[in-house]
Image (cartoon, rainbow, N blue to C red; front, side):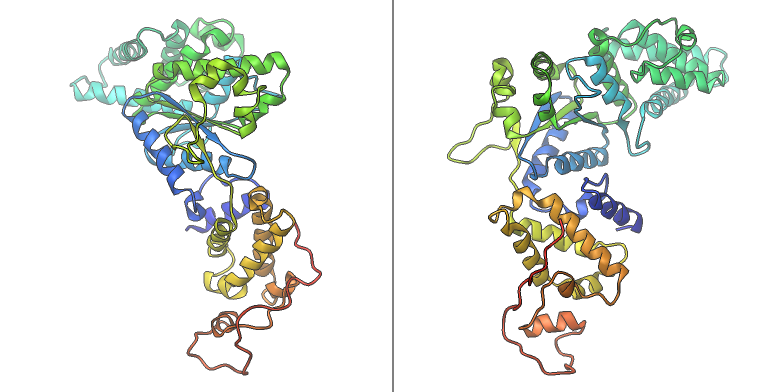
Length: 446
């Protein structure tokens, strides 16, 4: 792994947040979930439109899974958008606000943030290349007019004539302004098309539009955006709506309207071929009467079923299992080998597996062995330990944690000494199994 990516992973984990990239490096125990989401990507790439819900309690890795989906989607040629539900600046039932979040957050491998302008350029460039392939010369005085005609034709045809007239005018004007070298005005219109309400009236007048994209029109605009994304040679658009349970904290009437908005999206999903919506939420969000279960029309469409404790991964709700000690240990072992300032062999010598196992056990003792509620805190602690070892070459991890190994196997002694098993020992030591001493009275920082 590149140093830059490893450094990014550890910077994000120090803050208790999910990295934006490099997730493959420490994604363990989620292969079946990942395969199911990849299956949905294949369906959507084939022309379907669909919705999937990631269900799991705190600490199950919903946000991690959603970010991994974004990574997988982009690797498979999709454009993506990641939206976090907020009770401050996103009232989900107001589709203009949802549209602004989705389109403003467009991302592609070529443009990590605010990718709409880049997507438009790629689409228009494809139209120009198509005309050139047909023998039209770019020196033809009517070349730009032919490009505009193709823009109109594709938007109307691909959206079944549902593309708003203002949208077509804005797209046309963006192209014309760029051809005229008026890049700032073109960029301002791209902002308007992204849902911004801060575009000057003088700029709007350039495209003969007034006002902003309304809630009643926003989903028609989004359909047009999905078609532009596909026409720009992307496989489709993946939209993640993270932390849907935030809706439960909203005022009663807003909560009801927001849940109904999700129902509308579920019902209309097939009208957006090439688009996959993915919502993450806690079991309470889905099962509480104040949540999905309280909206019968939505609950009936996406309800979660188990048969003797076993659930199909293909149903609308994909239930993520909480962390257990084994999975947390595997993640820690992966991270141990990735630290940007510790060589893997040095990290293995100074933080042996047995120490990590003891750390996992110690951290989960206060939670009655339930590691599902502490992965974020544990990983932050583990990263801090690795950081300290990187900063202090002489620091001993056992002493740092108040855990002094006393009875070591030959294998453990060799690892701690940084030598191979067939190398001679400087001093004979006890090679009986197990560790002694425990963590002493030291506490593990969380």
